[in-house]
Length: 310
Length: 249
Ligand SMILES: Cc1cc2nc3c(=O)[nH]c(=O)nc-3n(C[C@H](O)[C@H](O)[C@H](O)COP(=O)(O)OP(=O)(O)OC[C@H]3O[C@@H](n4cnc5c(N)ncnc54)[C@H](O)[C@@H]3O)c2cc1C
Ligand SMILES: Nc1ncnc2c1ncn2[C@@H]1O[C@H](COP(=O)(O)O)[C@@H](O)[C@H]1O
Image (tube, rainbow over all chains, first blue to last red; front, top):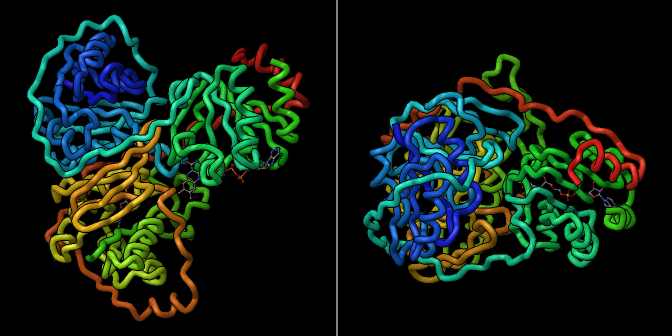
């Protein structure tokens, strides 16, 4: 049995989530190979080869993979898939974009957001925004799935000795082209990697207050900044700050929810955090049912007080 | 051009779902069902394209049990022109739905299919991408902006760490993210009018589509509950707990 992992990367580095997918593959058992489809991506290939447990890295280096679109990536993966029992993608936006396209081309089902491995064909995944966990068995010959990072402790990014092998790139289908990208830049840790997250909701009032109140606290803690959908919809912060069922899934050591009520959809994205702190003026807010430490009061006085106390 | 919009009937997003005691699934008896929220956004986008003169006809489609007619009536009340129910009692999964939709696309020849990005019951987020694969079409999943001109669509889509713009050749598949638009409500007169709009009922077999499930659900359980926490009186107490009890700062 061999397992192929389709890595997210920026041509130089591997994105977080890949080492968690490798951890999932280790649980399934078998030879673990990683595919790097990129353009001038030797750095990413070297990084993938160093991941503990990876035995081979397949590199498809071509201009059309500079910003790989699913239309071009999927045929490449499908061409390789017959040699594998499992094809794993991190459950990132790019994995979720491509994995179903690969599965349908192979005429197999796809499993989304796998959080545990029961056996080589049976997996656990959350449904209904994490309100239930389903144990699901696949009857297909090739299991195509996306792996939720928070379900698996990452393996070491170093110590592996994978062999790097160049493979032929697939054709450019010409169906879709990326014409622009807007990535939010920040000196803070990425939300999905952060050990600590300070997250703000509608209670912050507006974008200026969000930054004024939360940034000093995040700076003190070395934390990433997150938000509820209400805060994103109201334009306090960009989309990629959103934590929840339809945003990022995070599980930091410390998650501080400020002015967030604790909807099912928000909790779906952060309830696996080790320690949850909630600051909310409404003692009845549902967030207090999940929080390890709750503090009732006005965030505009409490948060600066907390920042000063650290 | 025609636009096809698949809409799924799901447990309303406000319902707190319960796992069945025998662990076979979710309790669905007497539970409020609604159109998947992302599909309302998909319908709205199609309506906007019709209002902008790009689309000429909007066809709403649902695959599932006979009650999906209610979901389709909602789509018609929002403004879709006609509806098709592909009726089946089989537990449909994304690959099966994609096969049904492929057959319908071949029959109806739309230039665009706009789906929701994810159904909030199975949380799969697969059907649109699978349909694109089966048809060999281009895809823009997780769209937050759509502009159609001539034989191309320019779509802004949400990616890890930001957004990107893709240029797609039509025909194409788009899946709607939350921020694409705010769906309109169906007004009472439009709900009345919707009752007279055409709603055809066909079967997957008549389309030659195989909807047999490939994934078998062995059991459904409640996730481990977080232990109820404690309330602290003030910031000093909170900092003390974080330092000395949780040891996270
Ligand atoms: C299909 C779908 C998907 C969704 N996906 C997501 C998702 O991924 N992530 C997500 O977060 N939401 C999601 N939502 C939205 C979700 O249902 C809630 O509407 C949203 O999470 C609420 O955000 P909030 O807690 O910031 O706002 P509210 O619920 O309005 O809560 C604001 C809180 O701030 C408190 N507050 C106000 N002022 C102060 C003050 N001065 N001091 C202290 N506390 C104060 C209030 O007491 C209140 O509890 C989704 C919804 C749908 C339908
Ligand atoms: N049974 C169904 N009937 C109609 N549309 C569906 C059905 N299942 C999924 N869809 C469409 O596919 C989208 C994504 O669903 P999923 O892949 O299940 O997360 C939904 O938002 C709908 O637009």
